[in-house]
Length: 274
Image 1 (tube, one colour):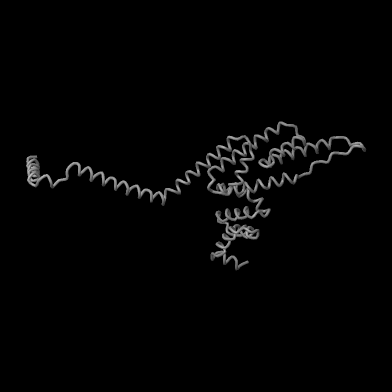
Image 2: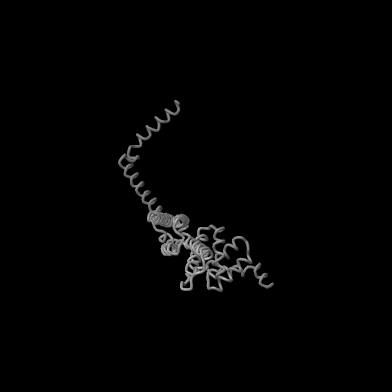
């Protein structure tokens, strides 16, 4: 302790003998410190801006876009109609940037279609009811309309079988066809769009089931998706088969995958055995 105190006294005497001019005054220290802090702050800010330009801008834009999509989803949920949900799903169903909201919107669309089907289940099973159902909901809920169409056709067939033979002067009502082309077209369109949507949100189990029918009907995008799912599952020959069909229907993305697969040695050997 004494040695430390003695050293402090000696140091103080030396400073006094050397003169106070050898040390900066308080104002100089403050000014210098402020200048250094200012320059450091400017440097840090500039570096931060550069880093934001390199890394943060995309994240900020993605966050803004995600918020915008969530607001769009809420706006769709707040309005009472089904068709706006379907149009949104068809417009963005193949864009993976929308995957976060597509699932929710698809489920809400299905929920509303199920509610409409329950409502119509309580109405008279007649052609008049079918006409209203088809007019209002064929675009978004074709499967539900098709199910009601089947009920009407079956009921009319039962009534016709139980009714007595018509008089010669009465013209019998033409029975409903077994299949309605407009309804079938709407069902096919919905199934194809479900295929694209399910593939985009990576629900591959349901996507494979949804894509099979449109792929068999020569929808090139569905065929490409079937090829992609087969490729992911390690089913090389199945993938090649679907890619070839998609290419024959003009799908350029399928052509790229087909060329990539056929360029590998494994497939070259397979080609030689055909």
